[in-house]
Image (cartoon, rainbow, N blue to C red; front, top):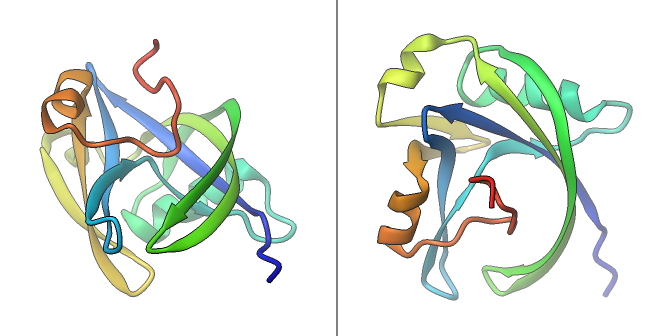
Amino acid sequence: MFMPIIVKAMLIVRNGDKLLFSRGFDTVKREAFLRPLGGHVEFGETGAKTIRREMKEEVGCDALEVRFVSVLENVFTYNGKQGHEIVLVYEGELADESLYRKNTFTFMEGERETEAGWYSKEDVAKEGIPVFPPFPYFGN
């Protein structure tokens, strides 16, 4: 069966030594994971426009100073299904400054409520939770 390659755009947001990630859970592997916020690039939409649209839809605010960082290819299995995505990675800031003062907050991702939070490299190591797609988010 043919599965399409999905193009996504994700935003790295820094808060001191912490980065903003949403929490996910693979029910088949029974494994939690972290991902930067973002989503699918729609036809005719640039990656930067995707970031701005997704931040408005998900966290209800604009993304500022959006700048391109890298492209990643990610082949993975999630909930028992194979996936293949090309990820356009951007860095930027959130216009809603109150989000930087919260350790965690919830947002809507499509039809489901999801949690996001600020994680340092040490937090990620202590929890033993992987970050997807694999990328040296903390500069190593």
